[in-house]
Image (tube, rainbow, N blue to C red; front, side, top):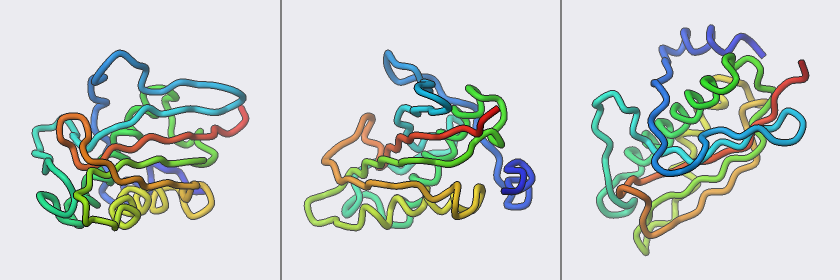
Length: 158
């Protein structure tokens, strides 16, 4: 796997500053040997860029949902970097769990989450950047955001 920061530069990607916690929790928790659990992140990049709010299938289009999922991944990566200081320490993304606010007729949750999954694959490659994944439709998310994603990450041995 190439240097993730070089890859980000090639793709014109920069990480946002980690956002404030939306409750009483820790954004990233280390557990076991080389494992990290990353609390759920929404799509607000905290840079003044508006986020489309609402549910997929009514107020939010598939493409807007994919962009929201990508932003969630950027926020997760920012939290990870704040915790481990160097994203090149990541061995692989183990599992992604995504929640997609959906109306009763919307059933393309996996396609929405592809917006975030593609970012991981682009930055970390197919082996490290394609985790196991679940995409679940829910009726509402905090603050009326369209997508929230959490994940498990494995670090390389020191």
